[in-house]
Length: 275
Image 1: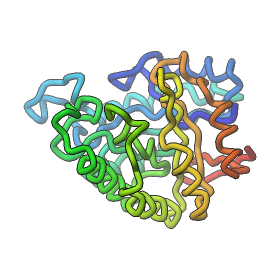
Image 2 (image 1 turned 180 degrees about the horizontal axis):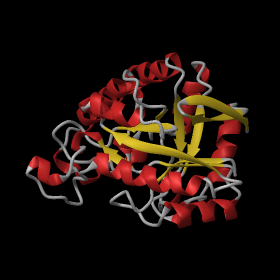
Image 3 (image 1 turned 90 degrees about the vertical axis):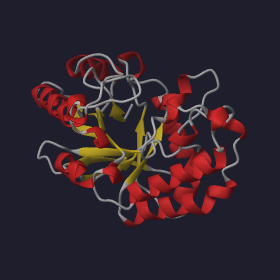
Image 4 (image 1 turned 30 degrees about the vertical axis):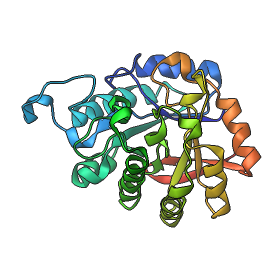
């Protein structure tokens, strides 16, 4: 197994286990590169009390604190991680909502890479919590991709996370037709390519009863056809038992599209490794 560049530990409110436990599991799996990318919802950078709010399953607060604690634990484990290359990362959600705070984490000297993600639209909860019976689905999906494009146009990220997250919880994801959104998706992909950033092949959905990947292979192929060559692989593991789940399959998928290399980042500098 070559890499898993999107993982979460106990510093993320919805995840488990320490960095040391992840490193030990990565060694046993034979992973060569692993990034710990705990959740930083940048629109809630401070603790809940700062906003006069209460922490809940729907809203994670204290993104800045999460990064500080996660980065400190990663730094403490890096000297003991060999032969695994342990990278210090962060998954920053909603970057366009507070680019200045995102820049603080991106420019932190400890940071190797940032996964940029959109988990929620402005003023709304995570897509996981939406009542889809009350949504105009095509309008919602358009708004999602527009927000992803806004993220792509910023500079405080290295890897565009789970490009089709906004589809993940649709009542019938498999049946949803992305054709009306093709031009917008192409604009996102061209922006990624122009910035020499990367997209990820995210396999977190492979363990579901109806397996899926984010994005699907049609979008990965379109990225490749447009000239995109910067691809990473992740399981988005929130539990150690999923750290290597499906990684070999994801590597095979990437090869089938035409990729001969994967990429990783060291202090935001792109590095490549044969696939």
